Length: 199
Length: 262
Image 1: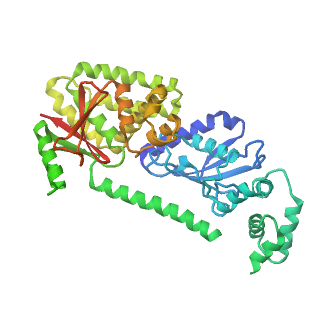
Image 2 (image 1 turned 30 degrees about the vertical axis):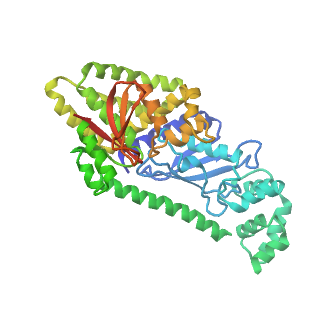
Image 3 (image 1 turned 120 degrees about the horizontal axis):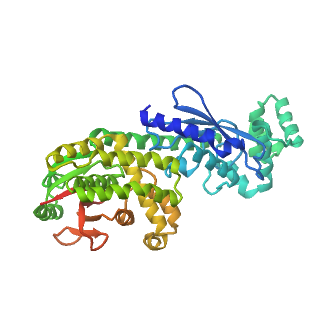
């Protein structure tokens, strides 16, 4: 990796470590290897959102051309959100694509992602299924997002109804995550989910 | 659905990858800033096209040389910086004034709300470049000009200069937002325009970028427009209007290069 990128990342790393948000445990960053090309970020789900109480882990890859090109960021923790793929964790956020500017930092990225969790943009979706549910069946969207936060990110609220439906599918030999994904997509209609899986 | 979505994600990746490949091809084949070339070298590009050939002929009565910049969307900023520093190398008083202005520019941007953390980085490199091209006396001018050429072809330095000029431009747009709002087409707010069209690298420059930068730095720029417009004359425009130009650029749709008057 080019020297400029490395020295910049090192300084940014310190910036995040010293930031207010670290003190409040709202963002975190750590090294994955010694080369500074890959980092692991973590953001706390913002209060008053379905993600509250969850911790979301991010994969951050720093390109050689950093800071002139944006870091590649993806959610490792599974999440139910219109602008984040529920399958791959890929993120649709302008500053990670065309609107990246060299004056931005890892801290800016983490805070922007946190802001994205608080204010989804369903009209510019990454995950069309989630976006549709967000607009069409918002209550179900909130429930599903909170359930995923509980299942994958350590969120506090359990949903016995969801869990029992997932268990039903598991009893039929379906993998837990696949069961959850299908039920989420089918608005927790067990019949439709079963149909979708076995037809 | 999952597979469709995966395809979408892959398509995004592919587009980005293809874009990178095109960028790489351009960067492998063209230097960030070229040597001085005779203006007539443009003729070869428009071989047989009368409109352009006539206009280049006219232009060559006023200008001797052209210096090409890499067409990477940063060409205006790079051409501007190179050309103005080249002028300053031969004008010590103006150089000293500019150095002071550049030194003070950081605090101004911080006041406007730019994050000092990243700003410092770019400002430092920007000042470093300015110091490296300090004119000592008329005998060393050529040597310093060589230094300028070396620095501007070192991608790290060169791009840092571009970033800093983008930030100065963005700062000016913010400072005089009311005035610049009139230049923006569509529903963009100044804020959105700055974040989407000014601050990111590789975004092309329009009149509004030029006016804001020239005004912020107090530098006159003349742009010669070589296009299919009427007449056999190349139209020139001075930014800011009525200023005494120190930087001469040629614009062909989508691209700026540096000109050297006779």
